[in-house]
Amino acid sequence: MKKRQSPFLVKFAILTLITSFVWISFDVYRAFTERPAPSVSAEILAPVDPTLDTGLLDKLTNRVYFVEGQ
Amino acid sequence: MGNQQNTQLYRRYIAQLATAYRDRSDIRMFVEMLLTSLAVFLFSVFAIRPTLVTIGGLTTEISEKQDTINTMDTKINNLIAAQDLYTKNNTTLALLDTAVPADPSIAQYIKQIESVASAHSVSVFTLNTNNIPIDTSSQVGGSEQKVTLSITFSGDYSSLLATLKDLESLRRPFLPTTNALSLDESNTNSQLFLSVTGDAPYWPIEVPQNPTQ
Image (cartoon, helix red, strand yellow):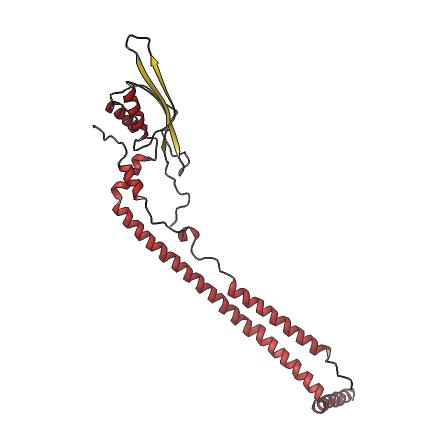
């Protein structure tokens, strides 16, 4: 018994459907993974290091310095 | 007459199509498949895709904003800690202005050198400097600049040595590049000279080009 072939229009519709699913999948993947441009400038986001070498400042205090009139 | 014939012809044709659709299961299946595909295509392209893209865009935007909030919170905490440190070490930090001034401040520095010399009973025989800029606004800010000094002291050996050590230990550092000892025996009282050439650094303040509002 000869198997009936699907018409061209049906094959075309199925291929179009598959293509559109692939396109939508990539589009959605990109929407979930693409990072938007930061809303705050990099200068404001730059980190601040709150450490201070107090040992160095103590050394500075002990260095030779003559007060005016001494 | 011609129009009526055409109408009859089309009616018969549509009736045949309807009969074929009703009687032949394969045609019914293909037509239903085609219409289903079309419906799914239209819904997915014009309804599901924009919704999912919007959800994705909003999710990443929320995540990015949360990261920004975390970064800013960390920065605020660091700034508070830095402010506390600054308040605690305010007086000590002021010493940095004398240790590394923003301009050559050569007059004050020469006074320091003279004080070192007089503390060790050594006399300053000569003192020369290179060209010192009066206005430092044209200099590149945020980088080290140097004043070169050439000084000749006269005195006894131990005092000259102590003077040199104190020069190197000044709060505003003197960085000797060459040292030379010489003895002048032309007079009855021979004199010992110490010639020192070195650099005293200063650090012009960097003026921001585009201050942040």
